[in-house]
Image (cartoon, rainbow over all chains, first blue to last red; front, side):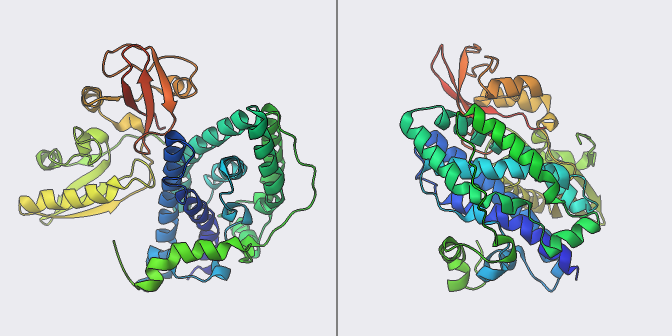
Length: 250
Length: 166
């Protein structure tokens, strides 16, 4: 089995899975009908992308492994998503800040993934980038609206950006698997996206009349499977059905 | 990326035309452009479909509907999901776009007009009720992933707009 490729796919897929799960939690709980529908639509896109990645990953393992095994039957340390996407839905401003900080990265990442030597990943990137650019438009728009909105919305979204900033640096950290895949021309060298990312994010924060955080304290670990305390709760929700009723299907 | 090349055997079209999109029942799968290939080999029908959006739940239903449509005429159909090339709204047929409007969904505009409309810059999306263009965006996301929600500022009718996807 192509172990590096398998783990590399999981690294991409888990970001979409966990963020999709987080957004899915908001179904029926959004601050307004329109935002509720928007957030769950984005969740659906992300879970759809995840499904394609997992089907591809499962096909590499063979052995009758399915997308469900990959999605539901791993332990916490085996999930490779970044810490940013697992942060809780503290409030709407927080959800939007988390979304924008991820979307801005996701868009840059997908653009590069389109140049991969792996045809399936290219197909997934070509498909996914259309959805991701729409997400980015939504979260960017709302970030500006909240930042340049009322005093209350400005304070809340600024706090969210300040709080989530510490998780942004991890996006550009290369794991061993990443490095191996970059060498083969399959993976994206995420470290090369860093300058563009902070430039773009700073532009939008400026437009939103928000302050760009200066903190140099960054946290990482998710990509290596070392997660924040929130991850266990997410997995408890996510895995409940498969763990309680093994092999259940819709 | 927008290669519109399909390989659909002419004798299969009558059956394919009986299968419609579960979310927009006036559109057949052919109108929608999701059938990329349909051929018959040794009595078995092989069909390739492509999703509109990655997470579109209609795809599973369409796959099952295709199988049962061919089962009705005594044929076994095998359906495969393909991702490349990625679906675009350009693949919706002209007839499909007209049917969509009659059904109450504004058809996708071309890319630039679409972007401006979704950013609320220009009023170009026509109301499906009165036909006027004095409409405004209510939500970038509508009842399904492929639609946005608009309302008419003249007749006050809310309606869906099928977003341009390239």
